[in-house]
Length: 143
Image (cartoon, rainbow, N blue to C red; front, side):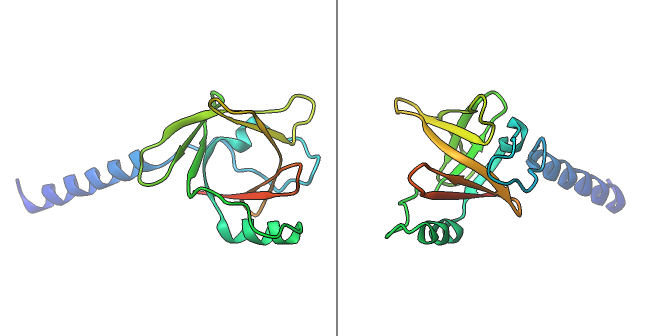
């Protein structure tokens, strides 16, 4: 095999590896205001906890201490399942998610064997803002 063929094969292999690692996000979520209708497609994808924004939003809401968050990446799948991972590429099943009927801005997340938690969901600058009824925030950034 000559040098030119070897370089071509190496480039092709590298391109295939990059394309295999690329995620498929259905739709880029637009900026939304409270009460705006959301689509399931806005939620689908991998999201990472944004600690700085979460802390700031909890402080703005008058919370004494920021909510203790697990350092997890969240993945909302099209079929309504929700996965998490704490490191690396390995995701595990966490439970279910859906948008509450009639209130399209309400995201319902339920861990397996736990009660569902409702969040008011909105998007700003590519981040997903999830606010609970008690005013506590979780801000997720696109991974």
